[in-house]
Amino acid sequence: MMANERVQIYLGISRCFLYPDEVLLRRLGEDYSLDELCIEYTRLFINGYPKMIAPPYGSVYIDGRLMGPSTMQVLAEYEKAGLGLNAQFKEPPDYICSELEFMAYLWTQGKKQQEEEFRRSYFLSWAPTFFERVIKNTKLQFYKDITITARDFFMEDIRGYK
Image (cartoon, rainbow, N blue to C red):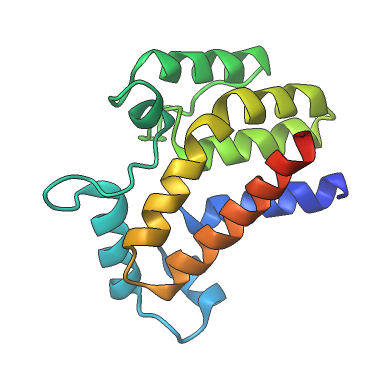
């Protein structure tokens, strides 16, 4: 796979796990309303009852809580690459979209080894569980389809390591 393809996949998957907006809606066409997407996003990733169904944060899966020690490890990885957090961005550093964008950034900077190390040692330690939770619990085909695509892409990646 060419670097540009990997970057586009990372950014495309990341875009789909951000809170839905008009930009996403235009890309999807007329299959969904913005209300439908926002309601399902909220149910899955923000405040499903009785608990959040698929928290999009690595620390929840690795440390058993939000903002655990692994969050600080992710932040350290960002800083090692010369990046910091935007003060206006309100998500923790281990938000799935941030991690995907970080991996895309590393590829664009020619830091393939650092990206691979981050992906293998951190991202793939929690993302497959997140993907399975979304696939199992979503009520919208859009989230099922994008999550199956993400899961299959990364599972193929894992198989390539063996």
